[in-house]
Length: 274
Image 1 (tube, rainbow, N blue to C red):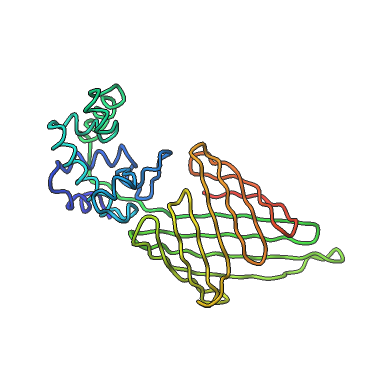
Image 2 (cartoon, helix red, strand yellow):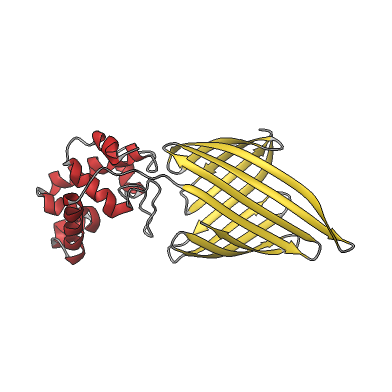
């Protein structure tokens, strides 16, 4: 999708203004998430999106529709384009009470400059790649995953391979492949299914920084539970329970995660994802 295709959904604002603002807010990346938990192309917070009836901020059409509606509200409230743009960043109550502050003014100038140089640009959605491994004296396991997201859909695949060592000989132990599809009508709710050894059902609740995922084996039995918590300071914790308990914790530098894995079989591993 190109930005010009997306801007067709903007009616009440100058389309080059919204196009330039997309560059400032997310660099045209549909799944951008800020440290303050603003989401998507135009970095709307969930509480603002709810006020305008927007369900899925990761969907570029929903995101730009919500941002356009928010701009209209700000203009009606503040009666000038400069105050409208500044308030998008600074907050409308702050602008009403104290006027445009230095950060709001800087944001306004940055958006107007981006508007001036705006040109039709490709909209990017995420492609995810991750790998993790664990090792003990007689066991080695490698897990990898890949996926991509587009609008209200998410596709993914996981791979698992393990080896055992006995009598100074390394032997192949097991290999598992899994493919899945998730549908998320809302930013904090999705359902889906995956196929590997079995046909599983998934329910995901919560925003990416605080998620709970339940898995049902063959649509009948509770197979696993996953919890993800991420703090604004870059620290994160992942808890995964199936037959065993696995805890992964670490820190993030930009979008790269580094961590250590602990599990109930007394294995310790390292974790990295992009």
